[in-house]
Image (cartoon, rainbow, N blue to C red; front, side, top):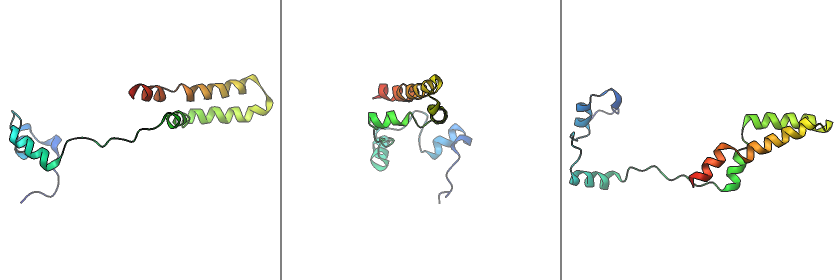
Length: 108
């Protein structure tokens, strides 16, 4: 009878883990690997849905610093100061040139 609680793999010795996995230090035989692949399927994570460029760009504005800059700009905009224009420009630049946006574009 098998134990209903999953093992704490990090706490097992290497020999105990190999025994529980029914494996050896040399790995699995080709037949056993094929049987496990057929039984359990490939060891892959599901593919995440790709986000379009517009959605990635808009996600850059979902940031507390951007909210603070936009709020400061909105409060000082009626005064028409140069600082309010700079705050808006900084928020736009941060959103347009965000690191996450550039990294995701390079990742595609």
